[in-house]
Image (cartoon, rainbow, N blue to C red):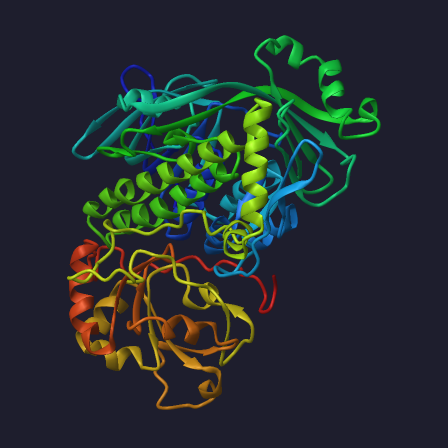
Length: 565
C-alpha cells in the first residue's frame, strides 16, 4: 500500500494523498516512519536535502533510544555502529578526575551510555523503510505552506519537478531547529542561546584511541574529547569572546587547540570543523490541530548530557504508536493530545539538566573553577553522592502524571503507572535469554505476575484487549516455566530467568500491568481489580476495541537472536 497519486490540480500542481506526512528525514522522522510502516500506515517522508547528512552530529545513544530501535526491529542493525558502556570523566586543568559517570546495569535491556556514529545509524533507519511498501521518501522537497481543515492538512511542496500538493490526515514536523513547520504553526520557541561559541572538530583515525569521553573543565579553555565509534573522535573547544568565527575555523587555530591533547596535530584526518552555539529552547506547544512537532523542531538543548538526539527519539517513540492507533481505528484522535502532555515537560527537564551541567563545566574564572573543583572532590568522597553521579541517578526519567495513563485515586506516591517497565532477559517455552520486549511484541501487552491473564481479566476484558491486538503474558518464577497448567493458546508463559521480575514486583502491590507500545505502564492494579481497571483504562486512552483496522496484523520484523546483545 503506497501513497495515492491524484490527478493534477487545475493549476498543474501534482497532488498526493497519504495518511501521515513527515517533514524532515532525520532520525526522528525516520523512526516515526518505521513505526508507522510496521502498522501498514500510508506514510510520506519529505526532505529539502539531497540525502542524509553524512557527518557526525549526535555522539551519544542511551538505553531508551536503543530500546526504541529494538521496538522497530532495527537494533541489530544499529549496534555495530555503537560503543557500549561509554564512561564520561570530568577532569580539571591538570587532567585529574573530578567526577565520573559510568552507569552499570541494563534496566531497560541495553547499556545506559553508548557512543555512536550518527550518519551510520541514520542510514540504518532509512534502510529500514525498505521493508514497507506503504512508506515513501522524497528528497529535494521543501515544504512551503500548509492549510488545515476538519478532515486533514493540505501541504504545498516545491522541488525539482515543480510544485506538489500533498493531502494528509496528519503532519509531523521533524524539520530541525529552524523548523518551517513550527514557524508556519505560529508556535513560540522560547528559551535562550548561549553567548559562548564552541569549535567542533571531527577526526578520522582516532589519534588517541581511548574508548571513553573526557570533559575538560579547564578555566583557560574548557574542552571535550569524545571517542565515537569506527575510529572517529570528536574534539570541542570553547572559543573566547575576543576570537572570531573566522579565526576559529582556520585549520591552524584548531591545530593549536589540539596540540595540548595530541602529539602530532598536523597529522590529523579532519572530517569537518564547525563553530556552533548552545541553545536551550522549547516550543510553546508540540501540537497544533493536525500538525505535530518533534525532535529539534520542538526542543533544543546543550550537548553536555548527549540528550538532544535521545530526546528526539523519545518524541518519535511516544508519538509513533499513537498516530498508528488513530489511523488504524484503534483509538480516537483524543489520544493524540497526550503527546504534548507527556513529552513537553520531560523535554524541558532534559534542557534544564543539560544547561546546568554546561554552567558547571564552562566557567573561565579561575577562582570559580577552583571552588567547583573543591566541591566536586568533596562530593566524590561521599559514597552516596558518588553513586548518585556514577550511576546517573540525576537523569530525569519519564514519569507521566497525566496523559495516556490511568492513575488510581487517591494517587499513590510509589505507583509504577506512568513509568517505563523494566526489560530483563527471560525464558519462554521455546527460547532462552530473550529480551522481554521481543516476547511481548511491539503493541499493547497485559502482564500478570503469578496469575493467568484470562482468569484475572475475565471474559469481557480479555476479549476487549484481544480485539485491540494486545499480547497476554503470564510471568512466573523460573522454576514454574515447564509446568503446563491447562495452557491457554492466547497466553505466553515467561520464566523469570534471573529474578529481576520478581524483585520488581516485590517492591510494589500491583501485580497486573497494562503496558503501552512504548513500554510505559499505562495502568496497574492488584489481581481482583483487573476487570474494573481495564474498563477505566480503555476509556482513559480513548481506545476503540474492534476498530476499523483492529485486526490488521503487524509486519513481522527480524529480532535479535536469543541471548544476543
